[in-house]
Image 1 (tube, rainbow, N blue to C red):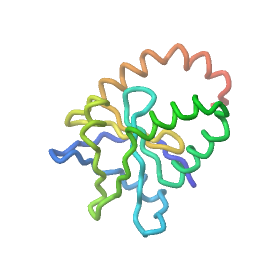
Image 2 (image 1 turned 45 degrees about the vertical axis):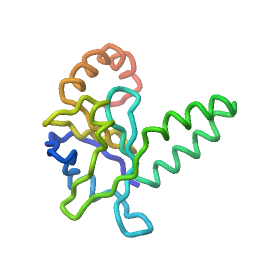
Image 3 (image 1 turned 30 degrees about the horizontal axis):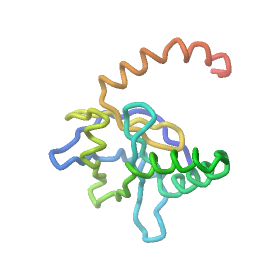
Length: 148
């Protein structure tokens, strides 16, 4: 599977849908039922994390392997799955965002759809700007690992 990258400004409609960028739809494989299925949940920061179904399954399996303590694994599983939601792309390329996730991420009319490796993130543009400013010094420290 290819990775998602880039950022796109999009509009959240009155029904809580956005048009998923065509570039992201093009690299997302269809599930067994022939549709593009994603899992949406709360991101670690105040954004929405969107995973293709196969990547979601891989992440859950990885969690089972990495977190060996039963209580810790249950806490993580419950938190992650409590907010998780199956969403499919409609024929117009739109994906629905549940109201509780819209509220969590402080989404308004304009949103940023961000490719973040093996997942997609949906951000309020102002919240993303604040996050990027807070993370800049940390990024500078880590940038030594990059060869750009």
